[in-house]
Picture 1: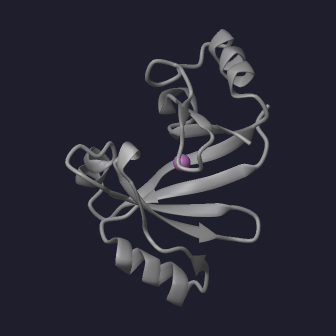
Picture 2: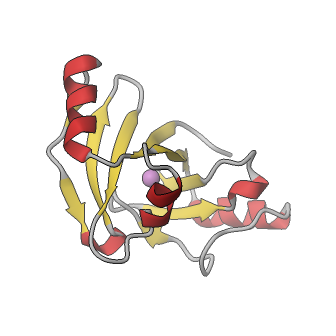
Length: 134
Ligand code: CO
């Protein structure tokens, strides 16, 4: 069902320091910061040859990642995103196998303007999983 690893998202307490780390120390190609108000995050996209890393920092008052940063002051891996061909088919198959889909279970438009869903970390080895329709 799942295809390519689309990205790994890392929440960071200092976006410019994290950007410099990936750009200057690790030598990766990094984007300018992008504010995604609808998602409550500012993102820097790190492009690797085979996937992407997203450096996430809270944006606005009610960012969904603010509690994560409170629990993990130095940041940490927040979720991984796998591509699927058809998000509704994938959702229905997973639900039929007992997996929990977060929120109201309907796909939302994600950071790449494609439909996404999140799966409960307790059902996937303690990892928050995002599915994105490729
Ligand atoms: Co993501």
